[in-house]
Image (cartoon, rainbow, N blue to C red; front, top):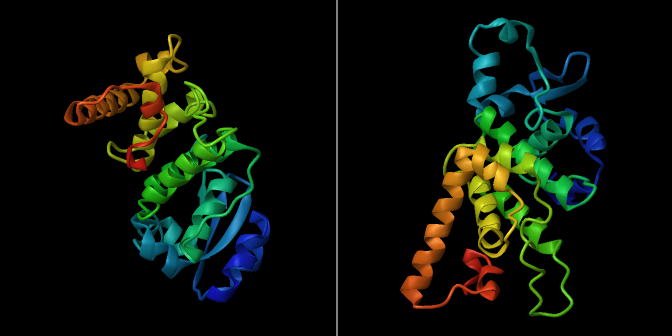
Length: 241
């Protein structure tokens, strides 16, 4: 199966869940996303091994453990067919592949998956998702030449108020929360009309994360005895600059 990973990762999401899921050992449980929504036959040992949330459902004597089936109600920004597709991909393959309609949509999907994994208490995705969000932001910045930094708002151009709100609902210290704050810091310093000023007033976790990021920036420049410049703010903390 490992040798087919590249081919299977190129499948549309629906083909993956219909073609690959039956190949893994059971017993199986049925997970339905939304009343009357799509059903997934998933290996119970695999699901319960990685998720205490599902283990409590299917191995604790509750109704779901007798029926070996559960309906997960759709929750905006958390539970959807697409986020569950990706969660199952991760559990079966340890990789993520999805089709998006652009950078904004990609970030939406990645934050949604982070929240679903958090809800299901599935570990190991956190840093991967943050790295993918960062890569999405970086790859969306037009580069006319090597030193072009994309403008003061380059890192937040494809972030939305929903991204800020949803990421803020993750646990403090979650890499996805941290990368959203890191992306926001430069624009907050440089822009007179900061795009997420309203979110700073309404989302306490976002404000806390951004203040911590600004503290790290100031301390870093104090230690280096360097000037906080637009050029330096265009880079990320792990860029080595």
